[in-house]
Structures are given as C-alpha cells and as structure tokens.
Image (cartoon, rainbow, N blue to C red; front, side, top):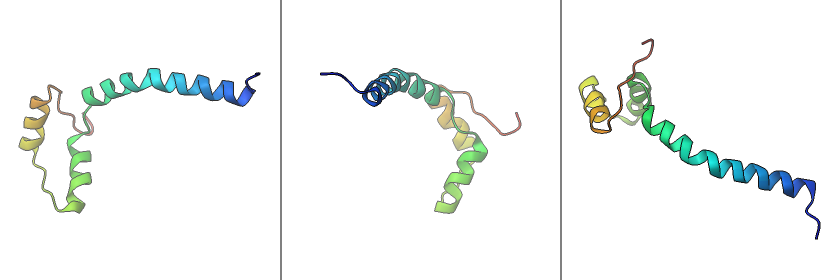
Length: 70
C-alpha cells in the first residue's frame, strides 16, 4: 500500500517533534521565567511573589534567576 505524500509529511513532522520534545523540556527547565514574568502571571491570581522567594526557588531548582533587562 502506497503512503500518501500527506502521510509521509505527517510522519516526518511527528518524528521530529518526538526528537525535539526532550530538548525543549531541558531548555525550559534550565531557562526559568524572569522575576517580572512570574509577578505578572501570579498577581492577577492574588498571589504575591517576592524577589527572595523567586531567588530561593531558583536556587532549589539549580537555575540562575533572571530579570528583565539584565
């Protein structure tokens, strides 16, 4: 049975996604959101994020804290 061009393209895309996902997970865990991004995310939910908490969690997660403009 012949595979259509569409099916070939879909299989190729899916295989590349499978290869990329572990690398993306690694990158995201090593690149935390900035302090400002965290504040923007949590403030509408009524959750206060302090610089000290942010830095402590980054230290626990073995990542370097990031700040906008730095």
